[in-house]
Length: 72
Image 1 (cartoon, rainbow, N blue to C red):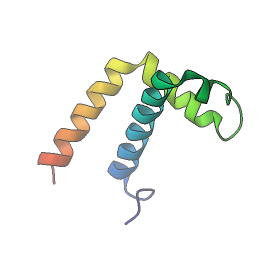
Image 2: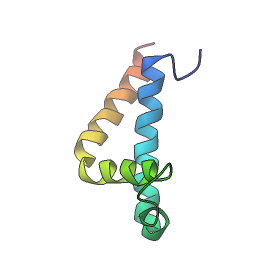
Image 3: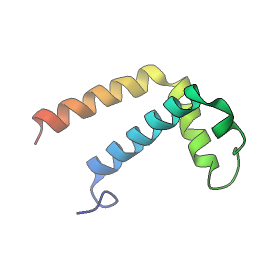
Image 4: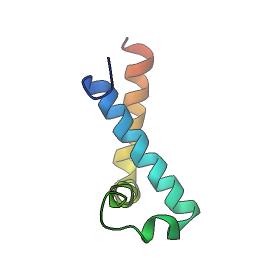
């Protein structure tokens, strides 16, 4: 089953995208800052979510890890 049709897999992909974009923006800010609109603007928005909501994103990642390890 693909990640689009499985809700838990979709949440995992979204959380990993947010964490990856925030990490890439911390390394090279100009890479994501020049693309604030369009399709590539999604990555900039994910980086902003990762930066501003980092305690909540971290809690979600911990919960996701526990459910993947012990929930299945």
